[in-house]
Amino acid sequence: MQDFIQAIADEHVYLFDGAMGTMLYSKGVFINKCYDELNVRNPEIVLEVHRQYVRAGAEIIETNTYGANHVKLHGFGIEDELRDINIRGAELARKAAGESVYVAGAIGPLGIRIEPYGPTSVDEAREHFRKQAEALRDGGVDLFILETMANIAEIEQGILAIRDVCSLPIIAQMTIGTDGRTAYGDVPKTIAQRLDRAGADVLGLNCSVGPDLLLDAVEEMASVTAKKISCQPNAGLPRDVNGRQMYMASPDYFAKYAKRLIHKGVKFIGGCCGTTPEHIKMMADAVRPLSPRRAFVIVERNGKKEEHRGVEPEPMAQRSNWGRKLAAGEFVSTIEITPPKGPNPEAMINSVRAIREAGVDAVNVPDGPRAQNRMGAIAVAVLLQQRVGIETVLHYCCRDRNLLGMHSDLLGCAALGLHNLLLITGDPPKMGPYPEATAVFDIDSIGLTNMVSLMNRGLDLGGNPFGEPTRFTVGVGVNPGHLDLDYELRRLDWKVKAGAEYAITQPVFDVRQLEHFLDRIDHMRLPVVAGIWPLLSYRNAQFMNNEVPGVSVPDDVMERMRIASEKSKEHALHEGVSIARETLSRVRDRVAGVQVSAPLGRVDLALEVFANFVGNKTVEKA
Image (cartoon, rainbow, N blue to C red; front, side, top):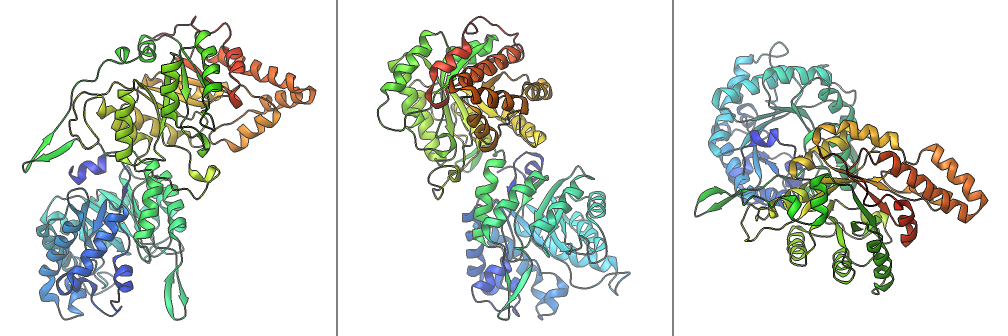
């Protein structure tokens, strides 16, 4: 496992655990007990909570030492056990974490006021923090987290105390109220600026309020610092239910806000009071598609760590004809066909024969688009290559398979001669006819890109050699019309760094939008294949504009389809093809190729779009 300072620098979004106190209380530990003392009095109950969070998907777990400082332990008459409690807390977390999860030494507020608001001097506060930090360091933590602080002066002493004893990374989190300020009146921008100057490696907010109230606050913090942001909200504000304080924010609600917080710039995310392993599990499922995965190339053999870089990938030009043309800068053409709903592929095979005869380079085979029930994309691709003799570009998505299944599938694809991949995260099941179906999402498209790139070097995702490397051309999807284009560009940059060799866009109807997108990614030198969809009718245009994620149909195109549809179905089909041909003509000088969809299986319409265009255009190699 890499040092945590490297984790701060990478692009992966890391998931913290949830509330320790909430879980211990649910297991029958009374609220008047010293929860930190359980590290030495009842370690098994603490260990089990840690393990529950690890199983839920937490990548960083906090030690059960939030209140294990001299001042708070003195209130229970056990201050002499400070060192043992903290060391044992670190050891328990490490035991649960293993070698793949980070352990954060948790340090909470002292519980007293320091100067000028109270009798405790800043030097005394620093000494209290230093004793706890020293014990946690000796217990073997990977990093420190100072959390739930309301006084910036106090957390600054905590940072200084940790720096007195070691150089481990520090996450510093403060807490704000419903008014968006700390108890001492500081606003998020001030918090960020002060913590940045104080030397925190990561800064953020936790506790007190739910995720909605922290959303704007972290955005303010991100606007004034280059440091990475962390956020661990409560499960909403507590409510009195029959005399008990209950946190009402559900795991599903938390998962939705996890995505929003990441979009605002949060890199380290978790939960505080009221959150449980179920909250963390739902957050993990939500976070995976939004986060580039870690590249695991370090393995341990005979007690020694070894790094496997694998072999040099075969040049893309030698992997397939599709790869050869992309590498040479030749204009590529492909038609996307939809797999059949039933087990009989004959109609599809006959239509694809027409595609081959027309001189189109390849056929794109989508993998359960819009979460619909269709014949498996791998089987379809194999049938088309074997029975028609045309190359396929296989869409392969993360939604339906865990890591083991994906690795097995891809090895099988390599053996069957499927060498062109388009790696996608996949549409969620809620879009399809069975919305209760379970999505897997062990990794997202960025992680899958990294996985395939490693396989091209003869390594699995764990960095272990498996023999002869695969020979995949590595393509990814991209959306030039994304509502948050900066976010889409960051994800594309991560995909390129993970090993993407070309990209295929969502259907493009607004050429200016595509041109703007291409201008923004010019520095990436990435071949882009533009997606084009010949519209069937005004109703089809409305559907694409309103119900297909990431697709935007301009008003002038909508109007053209409306007028044509009012005349007749044939006029609408002709107008849809004309718009698609105009789009192809306008974009061909800016892109590496074009993918034309065959709507409702209408291969004839796709071929009309390509008429007189296929095979006669060469673009300059980037």
